[in-house]
Amino acid sequence: MDYAGLGKRNHFPINRPLSDAERAARYDQKKSSKAPPMDFLSVIKFNSSYIELVDRWYPVRGFWAWLSVMLGGASVIAGGALLYAVFLPVGDPMVSELGPAIFLVLLSVVLFLFAWFGAWYAFKVECLGYTHYPMRLNRKTRQVYFFRQNGTVLTVPWDDLFITLGEAKSPITSTTYDLRAHVLDADGETVRESFSLGYPSLLGNAESIDKFWAFLQPYMEAEDGVERTWRHLKEQTGYLMPVDGRREGWRWSIVQNYAWSGHWPWLQFIASPVLGLNAVGRMLAMWTSKVPEWPAEVEQESQVDADDPYVLTWRDNDTIGWWELYWPLICTLIGVGAFIGVIGWIIVVGP
Image (tube, rainbow, N blue to C red; front, side, top):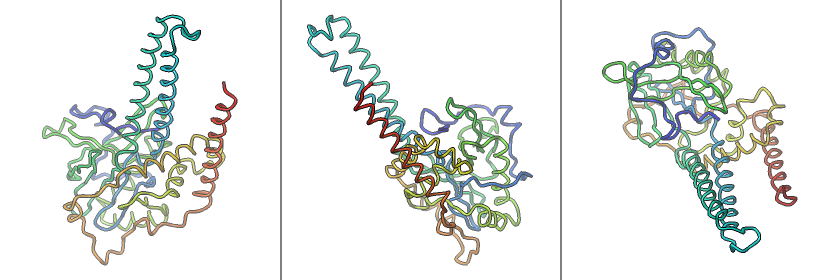
């Protein structure tokens, strides 16, 4: 899964000059896109004062959770088995010489520590941080607020951001794209901080960023931006993310986990062992993570008029249907059940 930028060891490159590719792919705040607008299930709250978005990692949460638990458990079992074999009496038929025993000790320690610490890092980042890292774009004050991974908040003027096409590569997801926002030094050249304003899911491409920009840019720049964006959310999206001051429930964990493959129910069934584990991992990640809270000064600068007719939250969502929830739920039960069955068969029958 695409976790580019998440964690201290995986953050976006900073303290560097802008690249030529970033300059060529810049999105000018004053220039709209002709692409059809799409929000990619990224909005948490909407009103005439501000729009609040989820981070780029929110759609893929869960993968590191279940993988780290499995890897950590397997490393403990494997390491314990090796140590058990090593510390058998030297005269035992299984260990006839001291040399192999010492080799097995070193091998078991190295393998155990490497696998366990790798699993612990992934678990810590996925499950012991925040449920999401929100961004708030204030149309009236023209400020952008970004909730950092350490719990602090970056505040930067919308017009000062250098916004461009972000690109990331990984062995699992190949090349992925996001709407990358850079905070530049006074020289206008050096990237001091970087974060993602939008992510078009696992199947997105570079053109998807144009579609997201066509959704986001008018809200901040167009005279009728509030109404246009509100109409899009009401008529074309139907769903806002239910994480405003709360953890998402297990139902939405399933919905979000399968959302990227919603057009292919057959694929959801075939991939159910992996997607099912990912749904369970997502629930674990959400239940063990903290809910982010904006500082009082951010809330003070984000006042919403009592009579604002454009207020939208997750409470205004459409009813979740069969193909959004119940079919993915069936796939989850089948996939997890199949995985447990295979593991049980291996334990009982043996290799």
